[in-house]
Length: 325
Image (cartoon, rainbow, N blue to C red; front, side, top):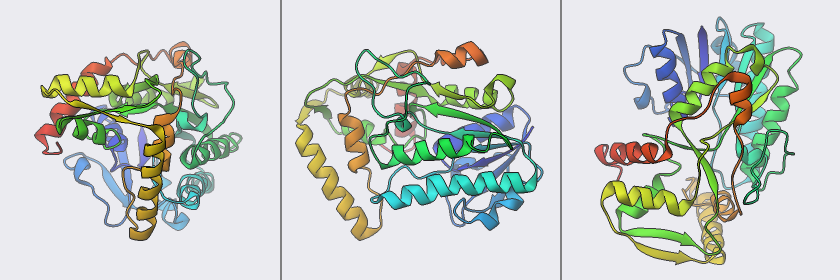
């Protein structure tokens, strides 16, 4: 197939581009001017300069490809409007460019469990659970998913909703690896809180299936390991791999919330999107982030199989080799 990947320079985008290239597919990478392309170095991809918030740049990007993997999006921002501008309106621009061009027909949209909001311990979400986002990012992913499926009469739309993704090159979980490497283990009051995670390679495998499988059209699928873990488990696995014995830092929820508010204020003043923010605080303090991924196994024949402990070990080794820890 010939595929366009938006957000190609990111963690998941790079992994997808690599696998597509290894499978012999033609890959076009949408990259913003001045963006970091280092993860894509050495891959036989063609670069197209563009931005999902600039609709005029998207028409040349989509022409001549068969599938669009839409991964580009904003994960951290101090104000709601930025999430809407990039994650929702940017997605609209991609869909409109595809419709105008007439090809490609298949859109694989990277949604998120956060669009449905937190679950309850012992009660994981199924795909039919109602949308109930708890923060701005989740709102934007809900709105974008609803928007894409509104194009179902003109495009073959399929949504993947990954949970928290692990793997070499990931920056979303890096802060917890760094804490442990410096001898600290964070423990939030009122926990532990169960969560689902998944290895990046399992996500890529499912995305590629959703790009071609006829049963994927018009459907949304969770992508998650069958294991349920916790933030404390993640840090313990990191400590084991790094060979450290961290001391536990107990952090009351009110303190985390206050620190996140301060960090968001600093982000607004400096224009830098800091790792700590209200979005992350709300996610960490939710009672659970769990879901069932049996629909993908039933309709697509895919089951996320890589053990999460192996994902943590591979990530820790990569971070250490790259000097990130």
